[in-house]
Every structure is written in structure tokens, then in C-alpha cells.
Length: 116
Image (cartoon, rainbow, N blue to C red):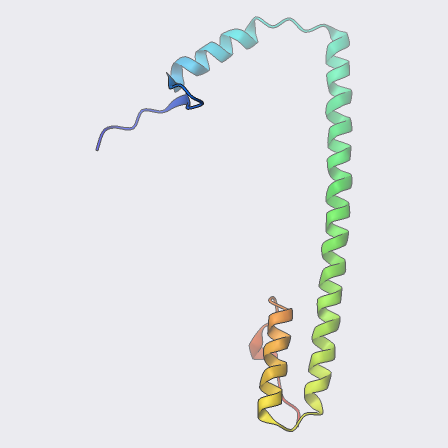
């Protein structure tokens, strides 16, 4: 096999490859030549803060959905476990245990106890 040379490349209908060191130097030269007005800096800060706040709202919303799903699964697991208490058939208990584990992947199967 050949040697590995870090590089950036593009394969969109053509082949273009630039060594990583050369690419990084080009970017650094470009960025160092940028002139940004104080007004634009403030506008950029506001944009970044607004984007951050929107992302945080999304995260909080996602966490709420996940928490709700976990509560639903826990409730379902409790209902199945309660039903198992009233069963006497080993086959039926086995099906209920499988249903319980399938519906709650986070549940430790060793913690399921039969109370017949």
C-alpha cells in the first residue's frame, strides 16, 4: 500500500486534491486579510446568540419528548409486570416477559421476578 498524505479533495465530477498543509496556509492567509467592521462583529454576535438560543430551545424540547417516552415505557412495563402476577401458565408468563423486555429495551431482564 502507498503512504497516507493528509489532503483535502473534491470528487464532484472532477478530481481536485490539495495537501492539508497548503490548504491550511491558504485559509490562514485568507482569514488574516479579512477586515471586519465593529458593526458587523455586533451583528455576527447577535446572530450567533440567536442561533444558540434556538438550538437550546430545540434541545429542551427534545429532552421533554424523550422524558415523556421514558415515562410511557415505564408505565407500560409496570402494567405488564402487574399482569404477570396474575398468570399461572409458564408459557403466558414467558410471552409477557418477552413483551415487557421488547417494549423497554433499557430494562434489566434479571430484575423481572415472578410472583405466582
